[in-house]
Amino acid sequence: MFGTCIENVRRLVPLVHNITNYVTVNDVANVLLACGGSPIMSDELEEVEDITAICAGLNINIGTLNARTIDGMFAAGKKANELCHPVVFDPVGAGASALRTDTALHLTEEIKFTVIRGNISEIKTLAFGNGTTKGVDADVADEVTEENLTESVTFVKRFAQKIGCIIAITGAIDLVSDGKKCYVIRNGRPEMGKITGTGCQLSGMIAAFTAANPKDHFEAAAAAVCTMGLAGEIGFRHMIKGEGNAAYRGRIIDAIYNMNGDILDKGANYEVR
Image (cartoon, rainbow, N blue to C red; front, side, top):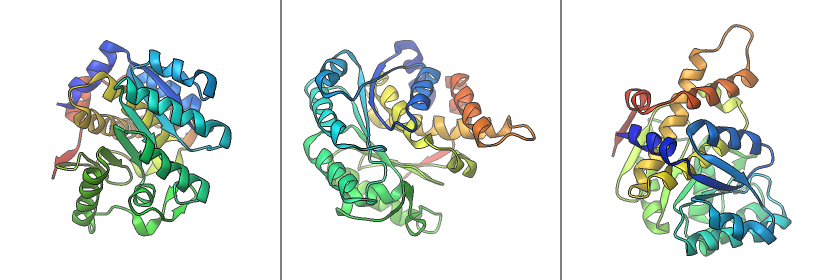
């Protein structure tokens, strides 16, 4: 089922506008190329509307938030809404500072997002208006586990319904909900947490997958999450003695580059609740 989603990305090669994290911008671009999309990066206010207008999707990430780029995020987001393009929001570090939290909340009020992807602490910050994070990582107390899975699924469904968009919570167990159903995804490796930017890369991929699959954004978002997790598994299997997180990052991107519909359908590990 998910295989069709990645095959559509490769067939349509959607151009994705990224206003993203300076720490991971190169990796986001490479992952978009690896999955079959095409990246463009621009956060300058004077051009973001023009760039968004020629793209099929928009990815907004506040990982290296600064006052200069905030206006560009709003302008690009509203332009994408006007054109009915899918918009993905990655509220990196929401809850860590007043600026991040306030900006994230304001963006969700002013822009209609197709998908919001974050860790559980960031999503709880958006849901409750405040929260705590460990820098840009989830607070351990918030983690989705098998023990609190039913409660977490109920939370993500309710929040997705309330805010009116797809919510993707990523971590040891990934949850993707449209407010009615929830994909519970168990692909991935714990070692992925040692690499900076797998979440940022995933948000870029979600933008490409939703742009290439306009009839089912929900399935497309879940397919992108499975793709990243499965790539983490495949990349880890190809690690050799002496390699560490730098090599692992490249192996994950290579695994995405070599992913096809059959590999994804066979390797996707999920249930629907």
